[in-house]
Length: 262
Image 1: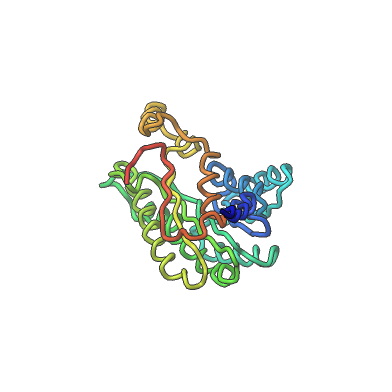
Image 2 (image 1 turned 60 degrees about the vertical axis):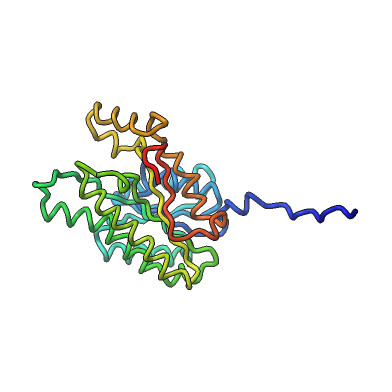
């Protein structure tokens, strides 16, 4: 009996790699965004760090370049649509393309229901939902030309909870999740995949700004009984950005340590 034909080896480096791709990471100067920016650069991408403060962007870029990566700092306020459009123009001017967009920047402003102000609501919605939509729209021509276009919208495992005390944050993140599915449906025929990543509690400034007792409750809430490190979001994000997820779109990848079930 003839031996079965050997299957071709899978090049895992290429499958999970981002060589020759340009990735824009908003909120990329700290926390999860910085971890993803560094991880994508290590995977071969040229990374654009877009965040509010110019000095923070430059520090992030310096750390990426010191590790041998390629990066560009573009200070951007996601609530300012002119700045969002300028971000895309700067990236195209510098790199000539956009392959991956990670909508990570977020406003975590919290006000209790009954005392939510229109100004707070607008500020949260502009950064968490409106900005990501218009960034994707501005980048559409470049994404449509990419052979591996991927959009990752960072939402939150909180959208699968009651969202008490953080109503503005979870409402806008839930809206971004809905937009993720709509984007996936409307952009599939252009070869653009759109997915969401929903982290649970992560050891970032957003969590550390809470009182110690609240931080302890957040750490104990997942089945794993701890906060995630920002670096633990790199693997899920790399999967969604790379060819490893080439048949995945319109989905939400939940990385919450067992906080929620689906």
